[in-house]
Structures are given as structure tokens and as C-alpha cells.
Length: 177
Length: 425
Image 1 (cartoon, one colour):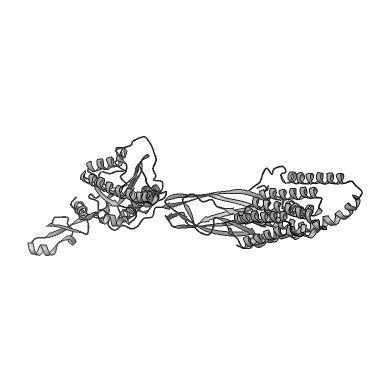
Image 2 (cartoon, rainbow over the protein chains, first blue to last red):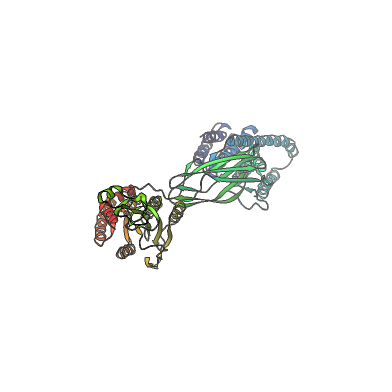
């Protein structure tokens, strides 16, 4: 019961973040509601794929809100969004596995400590990267836009491909569950 | 045990991919920042070093129990290092229910490095309950990596059929040579007084009947009846079965057979068992507590085995089916082959009682409740009654048992006629 309550709170925080960017426009509100509905079903069924879909819908709503409102950069909300997605996915994954099982003493406490530590580490890493990005932005100020976009796209591709290759390295042939 | 990434990695990668893609598409740095915590989680969740060594011990509170009784399983897990999250699962066989606790659990092995976990299992129906072994899974941080293995430690528990005490046991007509509880017509050493006869050399003084001696003027002694045991052979019909798994007519008949075996063995009789079915099996008549366990073990595996080969009771050797034995057959009398075999035994002079286990309640319990099913059950009961009357006319002694009430109640209805016949025999 406590796990479900925590998941609902995290889902509400997650779907409310795109709406906090600026005045809520109808497309953003609709996407946020859709994310809430899909995520709600995911929390009820303890389904990681549904909660992932809710996270992606929230990201799209967040991007749309940023494009429509065009506010100044707010890294705190972005870090909160990323950390909330991680916490929500970890919680739903654990709760789904532990459904109907007996939980030993201190299992929940140890798990929550672990999740908060990783989320905190992620937030700290994001803050550090933002601090390092300042000088890089100054260096690229004279570059043309297509070059910056091309480099960013290449960076995205390499990041994702690198992560996949690293996680599915030799001797790790497929998901365990 | 090797670590493997779980499906959660794919979810986080999806979020990272979408965040970076949208960041490039919109040119907003916030979306790239969103991807950082999931990337850190993916990096933090990866594990390469093997988990610490562990050992599992599993203990069962008993190796033998009766139907619907519980066995307590205690699992002890010892690890050489801390394990943040361990998942243990004991897969349950089909005819086993959880009576207490859970058969699936999560634990954190901390500084004490030992956890104890108990749960109770209930054997629903006679069976050889076999627990194959535990599944163990060690989870990495955030559930992003898992290492799993199977701890193979098979353990077996014999779940014997439940048997209620029986007071109205059918009395065998013929007795055997060993000491038992039945008063034999033969004269000899015993407690029950018999005839009075004139004293003969060799008679013991303590047998002198002084009252008769004074009345008749010469020494007379009291003879006694011997107390003897009997051979009882339980004939179990496994040619056909009706009903839900765990409550079929064969299960009911096995419960009846167990109750009869326990009751006759308590009276010092020798009890044998013949399973008359696709694959006939038997247990030679014997006495004692160990023999009861042998019979119960044999009843555990009594089941219907289909075969085209038609076997007869003539195959059974005389030492398994002694001519002087009381044969108690337990059958739903659904298969003509069993009726033929029982009629044949009665015709050969065997002391035979057929306990007709009614298949109607078992079939009724397995079927969905409806008015049509009710009518069908009533018609079947009437038809069956007519059939049993026909068998009685052929000379079979039949006791009807619905399998729901106690067998003792059904045997009480056997009546004084059988007792008189037995005493006269």
C-alpha cells in the first residue's frame, strides 16, 4: 500500500512538471493527462512498460511546453524530471517483482536508500555537467547552427549506442527478467 | 552466477534516447539534462564482480503427514558478504497449498549474514509431495542487474490418505493360526470358555471346572476357544475414476482402504492390498506398524492407468490372496471388469464384502451446479441403486458408501446378518 502511494505521488509530480513550465496550453495539458492516465494504469498493474510510456509522454509534453512557452533555461525542473522518472521506474519495477511475496525486515528501507542515493548522484552529475557546459557554450558561440546540431545529433547517437553496447557487453546476452 | 541486465535497462535507455532526441529537435538544453539521472542510474546499476558466495539449508518439519495436515519449511540463507536484495522462490507442486507464510520472499542480508524464512505447506490429497529446490535471485542496485541460480535440493514428503477410526469392522469368517482378537471355533489355549469334558491325563489343574466336578462326581475340565487373527485383503478398484483431482472415487476409496488397514492391523490381523487396475500391484499380507506404512505408501501411488491389456485376479498368487482371507473390495462399481472379478471371487468361496463408493457426489462436485445436473444426479442414483440390487441378487455383499460421511457409519449398516454369518462360519 505504501509503495503504491509513493508511486502515485511520484507520478503526480512527474506529470505536473510540464505544466509548471508556463501557462498550460491545450496540447501540453492533453499530453500530461494522457501520461497521467497511462502511468496510473501502469501503477495499478505494476507495469514497467506502461510507466515508461508515461515517462516518454511526459517528456514530449515537457518539450512541447518548452517550445510553446520558450522560458529561460531552468535546469532544476529538468533534473527533478529526470530523477523522478528514475525513482518511479525503479519503484514500479521492484513493486511488480515483489507483488505477493513476503518482504523481510528492512528490505524497503534499504531499497529506498539505494534509490535516493542513485537519484541524488544523478542530480549531482547533472549539476556538474551544467557547470562544465558554460565554458563549452562560450567556445561554440561563433559556430554555425547546422554544425552544432550535427554534433549534438552525433553525440546523442553515440551516447545511446555506447550505453547499449556497454550494458549488453560480452556474457550478458539478454534481460534477466 | 553471472549478472545480467534486466528489462528496466531498456526502459531507462528509452527515456534517455527520447530526452536526447527531443533536446536536439527543440534545441533546449533542459531535455539533455533530463537524460543525465537515467544515464547515471544505468552506470551505477551495472555489476561485474560476482555476488558473494552463499549457502542455503532447507529443513522440513516432517517427512510424513496426513491429507490436509501441514509441513513447516524452514530455509536458512547464509552469505559471505552483504546482499542488498535477495529473492527466493519455492515453486509449489500442483496439489500443494500454502497454509502459512509465503513461498516467495525478498530479503536483505546485512551484517548478520544469515536469514531464516519459514512457511507452511498443506498437502491437498494423497501424494508424494516433492519439493525440487529454491530459485535464488540476487538483485543489483535499482533492479538493473540480476544474478540468478537454482538451488537443487529435492525433498519429499509422503502425504498419506486421511483415515478415521472404524469401530464396526466386518468380522472375518475364517481365522488364521496366529494369536489375535477373534474367538476361534477351534478349542485350545484361550480366554473364552467353551465346552466342558471329563478330565484326561495331561490336562492342567487350573482348567478343572469344580462346579461341574461336584455336580457330576468326576473331574471335569473347561475347554477354551483359541483367540486367533485373520487375513484381510483390501481390493482397490483403479480401473475407473470420477471426480475432481484430489477428490476422485479412487481417492475416496484409498481413504477407506487406509482406515480399514489401520483398524484391522490394530486388531493384530494381517492385511494385504491388491490394486486392481491397468497395472495390478499388490502388497503381501502382513502385520504391525511398519506394515501399515508399507500399505499407506502403496496407496499413495494408486491411480488409474489406462491399458488395453485385460488382466484377471487369477494372476494374483495365493500368498497374496489367501483362500481363507476376508476380501474387502472398495470400488465405485463402474467398470464391468471389476464386477466380474468380484462375482468370480464370491463364486470361488471367498469371504467378500464390496464397499460400493458412490461416484455421484464426486461427479456432482466436479460439475457446474444446474437443474439439469441435479436431475441427472438423481437419475444416476436411482439407476445405481437398481444395479446394486442386481449385484446383491447375484450373491455379493454390498455396503454403500457415499464417500462424504464416515465409513464407520456405512459399515454399521452391514447389520447383524453378516455378524451372525461370520460367527457361524
